[in-house]
Length: 201
Image (cartoon, rainbow, N blue to C red):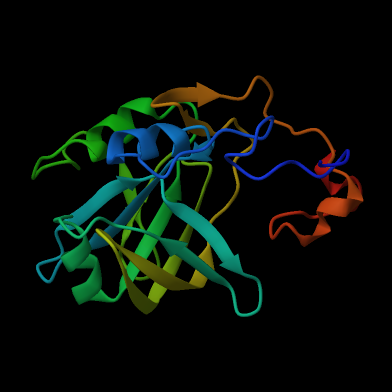
């Protein structure tokens, strides 16, 4: 008999229900309960042509050294261009950029035709009106199922705009009601992006 605060293991009467018999659709649905931001990862090819793709699987990884990660599919046409260049820019999209997300999330060879961008210090595309951007070197690549885990070392940080983020949740777009966030509890100081104090206000 379990006590309060100690849930029963899956399969035990009264415990949480779980199954080991699931397919990729069910796995995607379950993972869709995690709300995430949307980024566009950009670079240029050997002929200075811009390339990029929409990426939900992005995260800050380390403060010292400053590292980020993103996870391209192995079938991505943009990833080989990024790998060959060795540098990329992460553009964090705002809630006003659903069209940008849709453009880079769809297949096509001329995704930049309708996109206004400026060159980063390394000449890579920085998409205008993004919440922020970070230019990185490819630091490490790990094989992971049908994706790669790409670790990037941050070289240049872009300015931060005071606007709302574009979010992805349960297979659709979502935006926060307010551009500012509710202060977090000090217990969350182990969160990598927790800044503490009244800097959240």
